[in-house]
Structure formats: structure tokens, C-alpha cells
Image (cartoon, rainbow, N blue to C red; front, top):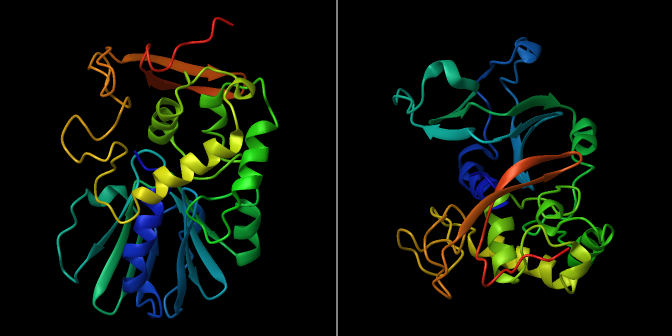
Length: 263
């Protein structure tokens, strides 16, 4: 499940491969950009903002979003790809390496100004250099009647939290995901909690929110339906949460540690 830490970790892996290198080949396999060729341009930076990856090459920005199935791989010249060729959406080559984007949910070639505009709606990124916890808290507090589990997934509130972290954060805060934000205590505590969870997984190959990197124990509630709560032993319950304008997504919670509001 790609979340903000996934993309920041990806950017960290791609930087030493691409930054400062000249593109020796560029194949963008999206009809709208089929004629785009960035060969000869130098990659100036590889950055992440929330769940978005930005590869800057001259006055062009390769903007991608992994969605559910996207991946970027690095290969040695001539090395066999680990995913089917028909799923490749971007193929970039530099001296000594090939970088391939597979099944990317979004792939655009933008100007720097267009890229800024495309991401202007995003809230503060807990993993970004300009993280502003107070602004994220204010964004959360702006809709006190909204279920906290929906607010946390809203990328305009804070960028980078996905379904894993919203479920885990709700558990850690002792709140059912459907609880209104206004009943969940200090929003700054929630913003700080999201930042701690994301930062704890920077540089990790496996996401861990419990502090225990063992099968079945890496998460408190996420994807643990009918298994015992790691704190109290009560069986974890699964359900779904959505609303007007919000797609329904799976949720997990402990009925004892996260009692559901009677309202």
C-alpha cells in the first residue's frame, strides 16, 4: 500500500541514480506524451511531495503517482525487468542504469509552474522540509463534524497519509475512525502522531507501526480482522467508511480500545 513514506523512500533510492546525470534515453509510454523526448537533459532533482514523485529534468518535470499498483525499478543495462514490459509507462536511461516506472496511476510531463499548480492543493507533508504541524492541525479542525478517518485520508488536510496510517493512528489515539474530528481531542496531537508514524518508516523496507518487525505484529489493526488486539486481546473488527464525496475504504478497529460513538 503506497503511502507518503513509500514515495519518499523511493525518491531517496532514485536520487543517487538520476540526480546530476544526463538522460541517454527517454520513452514515455502514455499516448498524450508519446512524442515527448527528454534525452540529453540533465536530471536536476528527484523529490517527493506526499504521495507524488517529481523528477526534474531541465524545464520539464516527470510527475507520477503510484496509486495502488505503481512501482519504479532501477536496473543495470541489459538486466531483465521484474514486471511485464506492457505495464511499463516510463523508461529512463542514464549512464550505467535504467529506471522504469510500471503501472503508474498518474504520469504527466509538466513545466515546473504546472507541477507547482498540480500539487498546490496538497496539505502539509510530514516528511517534507516545510512540514507545518500547526497548519495540518488547523486543517483537521476546520470540519469538526467530519469523521476523523475520512479527514486523515484527505490529502488537502495533510499529504502522505493513506489507509494504513489512518487506521493505525486512530488505534493509537483510541478513536474509532467514524468519530467526528471535534470529539477526538487536540488536532495538533493527531498531526504530530501522523508525522511520527511516517518518519519512523523512512528508510525501512517493511512498514512497522508497533515497533515489532515480525509477521502478524507489524500493525496494530490494519488488515488484522478477527485477530487479537495486541493490547487487550479483543478480536479486531473490519468494516468500511465513506461519505459524501469520499470513496468507501476499508477500516479496522478494536471495539474495546476504540469504542464507537453512540452518535
